Picture 1 (cartoon, rainbow, N blue to C red):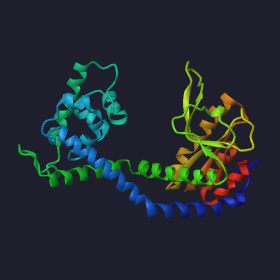
Picture 2: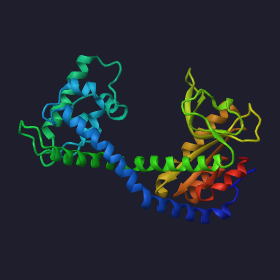
Picture 3: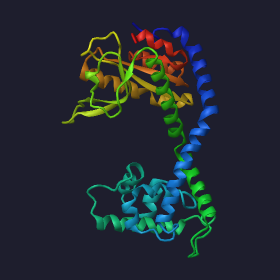
Length: 320
């Protein structure tokens, strides 16, 4: 039986309460999540500075050993350099730059000599454009004072965190949402499966749940199955072993525009699951934030139901 998708007369009030809940969380906890990330990133930036003689000697071999430092290098210039701009300035492979920036690795099939030649071009651009107002020691051979280096690293960390502020906030919110589900389930006798365990989603015992569990699906045109990560997989206490569990995606959003851009993601995921495991697959959302009637109507039309975090007890309506 539908829980919320068939009750449009409640949507407007729920949207208002959900927005209020998200805003309250954002004002009270998001700054702390951002600061914690900035502290960690600052340490990473300091390590990158030391590895490159404080941006005075960026060796290709250093970048090859530590490709994860590329975002730090890009944010160390005046002005900061975007990925595509770096590709154009240095005249290097876009695949090389994207692999290092996104996956923190070099392309697997690129020979070392070719990689070093291109990394040398990147290093030349970074050294040439390094921001002297931030890195005040440039032009000197002395080791910069600890305070100056830390200040510079904090500025670069702010730039890095600013570029990914939304994912930082979204990840912190998702952790909080899953923690709320965990508290609710355990209060009702459910047990969380060990992280990294070998239990597959279709082998779960009644009364168990797992977070970020991979569900394999076969996609058209691919010989091997791919794993679809699902935020919360719950096997109801009353459901016999061998049947499928219930799937939930934890979704949060800080504005209405972004949710309407992403609303097809859930429909695609549900379609893939049902194609592989049958029309009986139960795929639902756990929502907090800016989800308006347009978003809700789209999901309802796709047969996707949801639970509002401010009414978390609706989980019981799904047989949990």
